[in-house]
Structure formats: C-alpha cells, structure tokens
Length: 472
Image 1 (cartoon, rainbow, N blue to C red):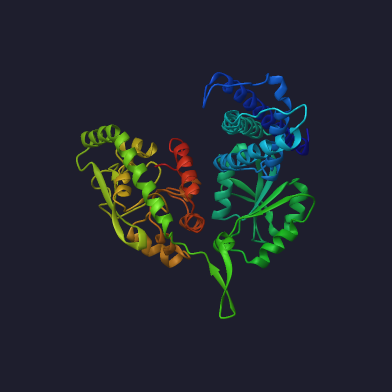
Image 2: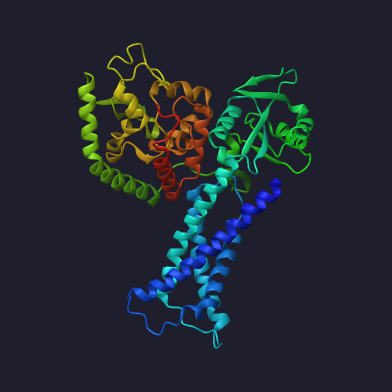
C-alpha cells in the first residue's frame, strides 16, 4: 500500500472512530436519562429509535466542527493534551449547534421531539470522554504501525551539528512518529563520506536535489538555526523537487516572532515585543495555583518523603537535604532543596555537571534520581514563594555568569520564577543537554505563558517522570 493510501486510511478510520464514539455517547446519554432521576425523573421520553434524527444531527454537527477545528489535520507529533483541549471546545460548540439545528430542522414536523436538557449534558460529557479515548486508541495503533514501517516517511536532516543531533535523537526515541532518517546533509562542500552521531553524512547542501531524488525523500528538516534568511531560502529552493515537505528549525528570533506587534511613537513605527513578565491577576492566579497544589502534594507525599529521608540518613553520613544556591526571579539567589543523592565530598574539587553513571552518586541517590524523587523537597521552595511548579529550571550562579556571556537573551529566563519542571524539560532537554536549546524553549514558554500551558506541562511531566532517559 502506498504512503498516500496509508495516510488516507488513517484519516478515514479517525473520522469513523469519532462518529462511532459520538453515536455511543448519544445512546449512553439516552439510557442514563432513563435510569437517573437527575435533575428529576424522566417523563414522556420517546423510544430510542425515534431519536434517530437527533442522533444524525448531533454526530453530523460534531464532524463539521471537528473539520473546521482542524482535528482531522494529521499532525505528526500533535500533543495529546492540546488535542484534548481542542476536542473539549469543539464538542462544546457542536453540542450547542446540534440543539439549535434540531429546533430549526424538526420544529412543527413529524420528527419533532423533546431533547431533554439532562440528556444534552450527558451527551456532551460522554462525547468528550469517549471521543478522547477513541482518538488515544487510534493514535496508539497508528503509532505502532508506523513504528513497524507502515507509511513511514524518509527524511533528510540538513545540518550535521548539535541541533541536527538533537532532532536525530528525537526521531530515534520516537519511532511512532513514522520517520526513517536516510542521512545527514552538511554545509561543508568538501565533505568526506562518514558517520556523525551514528548516522551517515550522505552529501552537502549543493547535492540536495540529487539526494532527494536518489533516496526518494519525503521530508527535509533544515536544522541550521544559525543560518541567515537568505541561506534558508536557498536551501528551500534546492528542495523544490517533487512533492516533499520542508521544515525549518527556528532561531531565537523566529521563536518569538509571533509575539511581535506594530506600535508607534508619535507616528514613528516601532516593533513592540510582548512583555515577558506576568502581570496583574495572572501573577495572583499562578501563585495561588502553585501554593495550593504544592501544599496538597506535600501533605499527601509526606509519608514517602519521611521514608526517603530515613533511607538517606541510614545509607551515608551527612544531612538529609542538599541545599544548593541557584538563581531565581530577577536573578536573585535562593537555596534550592533536594534530597541528598551524592557523597558529602562530591564537590571537593569544585562544582560540576551531573553525568550518566556519575561516580559521586550514592547507591540510593542513583535510584532517587532515576525516579526524580530527589526533586520533591523543592515543593517547599514553591510553598514559600521562591519557585513555581512550572518555569525555567534554575542554574547555579557560577554557570549563569558563563552562560550570559555566550547565549543571547539568557538572562531573560530570570524574568519569571524558576520552576520544578519546565517546557524544555518535558521536551527532553534536561541533564547534560544543550543550554542554548534549553534557553530557546524557556524563552518560548515565557513569551507564550498561559494557565492551560502550565497544566499541559504538569501533565506531561507526570507521564515523563518514570521513563525519562535523561534522569540522572
């Protein structure tokens, strides 16, 4: 089966799955209305078969709204949390739309029926739940098939650099995305056929048209954030062969470009960047959420934290907690708490990055880091207001002094509170990973903050906490 037919198959089965789940939700809502006396006992409810017209309107409205909400646009790596938000909004709109259409279509006709309000509410809630579950199942099956090579796209990565390696690793860790990397392309015209990051360098940028044809490439990813706009346009032009997709990894300015607006100063046009600092009620909302959630979690996890503290004390001499100076809001230092996972003399020769199989770790410390349990005391930092649940991860002052000299806009990370988790971390950038790339993700988070984004990051953190490859 060709790739185009495979994509069409996945798209059709997704639509059919939504229709099936919405129809099931409608039927279940009818049965619930009959069995539950909420808000009162059901009266004069017609047989189910007489609700067929309403069922068609209900399901049809949902499919139409889903189409315009781009829920049938097959994104390769769409966030399931973002999809849930969109499904919630689309089902809410389609439910109201179906009620309005049923009145317009069936009023004073043989098909006119009472659409009980409780049944409308049941159908709305059940549709959100069942459609979401159906889509999760569909994505899981599709991902498993793509991981086995069904409909897999052949991709070239332009850029044999750190950024190219980051994209390469993301593809290798996510076989369900359906990518097969055929090789790397370098900017060096005098390249020698070799391997970089375990992947063959198949050519230089001038060879792109030939490489696309020879390797039957479906997609090109340009991983050159340092390239000028002219260079990027030239690369895109070289990829203008057949029907292939071209994606470009953005630089720092492109990440924030969507937040640029036009302002004026007495008639003089100015580019106005979005203010990166939370203001007004947003600050209050974020702080209230941080305090309430961290306080509740501290109470719930207090037996576990007490048990871990006892184990730390029994395994090696020294304090239970390790307090380390970090840079927080407005670059003010604070003492960040962690369960001690290293020997007392771990920094006898000065500070250093943690690495896989770090010899300074204790045996218990290796387990605590693998499970991310060593981070739990930072909830105390959140309660007292030194940190937030979500935000850029804080760094030590000695590293901040180094990074601010070499990484553009690095200090803007400190215009928001440091977080226990962040946008960079849930995207795999933690541990011994690129600080420059982490900074880009942190700046994107600051520029695009919303309460829903914080919820999304927290949910993704829960899913990653056990199987994080960079947890050490």
